[in-house]
Amino acid sequence: MSDAHMMGGPEMAPQAPQRSGRPGEPVAPLDPPQSSGRPGEPGPPLDLASWLARQRWFAGKARRIVGTTVDDRLPVGGATLCVLRVGLDDGSVDRYVVALGGGADVVDALDDPEFCRALLDVVARASEIRGERGRLAGRRGRAFVPTLGTAASVRRIAGEQSNTSVVFGEALIMKVFRRLADGLNPDLEITRFLTEHTSFDGTPRLAGALEYLARDGGVATLAVLQEFVADGRDGWRFVLERLAAGDRALVALTRLGERTGQLHAALATPTADAAFGAEPITAADVAAWAVGVRRQVAAAREAARGHALPDVPDVGGPAGLGSLVGRVKIRHHGDFHLGQTLAVGDGRDFAIIDFEGEPLRPLEERRRKHTPLRDVAGMLRSLGYAAASARLAPGERLRWETDARTAYLKAYRAATRGARFVPESDDAFARAVAVLEVEKAAYEVVYEANNRPDWLPIPVRGLLNAARARRPDRAAGAP
Image (tube, rainbow, N blue to C red; front, side):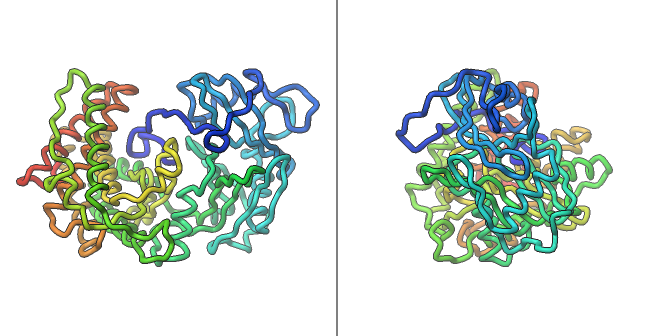
């Protein structure tokens, strides 16, 4: 998840991944290209490089794999969990998790129910499995289902990209992070905070986790186990299906706006945990955020040659983000769009999922506090993509987007009235959201120009409308 335009927004353009090892530590030489040792050697090398390049979750498709090295092997349920270092032709090195079955061919053990049950058992027992160079540790969460048992049904969810998810007994879902990064994954961190320190019930509760503990002291989140929302439907597809059926889904989007506000209020819960405590937004914060907006707009202008893009002056002043000074910055979703929600009860409620953030950004950046209005801007852009993707007449498409934005924003504003993380006045709220939507749309312009030029008019129109919404006589709800 967190992955596709089909989930409500464009994929993040490839970035250079983090190198393995500690900062400043040289990376060990890689094995020859296109080969790597097979667990249980001796035996022929497996062609892991070409197999990796074909996997949907492999993030380096724009680059060529020049070598793979098995850093560690951990025996799990008759298969082997491998930690791989993968070298790319731009000189970068990344780490991936691959579960290999036996035999001469590369077989993904996550397709094997027995292997998946063995992973679940590590969590259930809160046990550890020792590998050649590290350990796999299971951690139980409050929502673990002890009665699930080893005979629980197992099914792998198809169609995902950056991660792999497996459902157990229609009660729990395990998301395996294929790309490993040392540090606390925000999906685990935020879900645990919401489960253990708040009463927010709009996110599946944490049932457990798997962590990889390397010999050098590094710790990486390998998997997160949560409650499974059995009647949940992907929010992006839900909205498009409702529109196709003649239902404008405005009641559902009102509920989504309310749920978003409740999420942010929960993440602003007073706590002694420095990772979650709200912090005052300073003039320096706003100045830095404004620089980021201007940089993104400049990149969009460069990418969208031939398309007239507006000037966006004073993004950090009173007509932009300046009204946020003195409010607070908190943890937030970080990659929020319709595809990060589940419509429950045919849209009567929503569950918010996938707090990993944009998977290709460094973990520390994804864990950084910011104004949660970034999430609001992300959802507004997702509604813009939904309007463009729906089979509606042009006039009806415009009316629906206007009404959808209004329904969502009105409910969010009502749910967060008086909260320390939003501006006090409606005008200040609207202008801050508009600036953040400018930034998001500008990012989309760059993505579409580089990947899907035919789609470029969608974010260009969004950028124009968001820039226009900064005027005093406009509101952020207008498309």
